Image: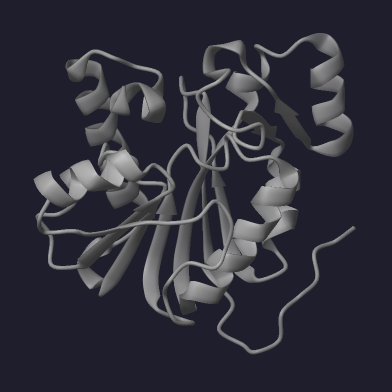
Length: 222
């Protein structure tokens, strides 16, 4: 059930394989060797972080899934794990992390929760630090019905309840799609050097952004 809540997968093999692939994707885009403190935001039961703990960085993981965090504490002793509330703030001081990565988190949040957590990511990242997140891209959008694809084209954002997760997770954590323009503009309020990477043959694309080094924060374009 812990694996299912993270990935909707029960078998161990595919679960581990996906986690290893996620870790490789992070390493491809971020130099973790020079990161002092890293946060896995939405770590679940350690699908990705387990593959990264062999490095020199100090790794932290947070999740609202108390049972998943308990499993991580018992089985991944090199990491630092905390169960947290569904809404900010996280129990860390300002400008604490060099890297925050979020796999399959913003692919589920509704717009209000997304905005709350993006603001919190800006708070806990150091100036010049990196945010790595995934979004449902163009490949995933092909599964949407025509009226939802039109909404995505018009607004850049679609959030839908899924029967598969009914009763397992709250309404604000269902399935979400972003357009490239939407997420880049959303991040532009507090980040620079925003890079969107479409991943071939994957339903999730990668976005990497650097927190502004200057004190002035730009407003997203309306």
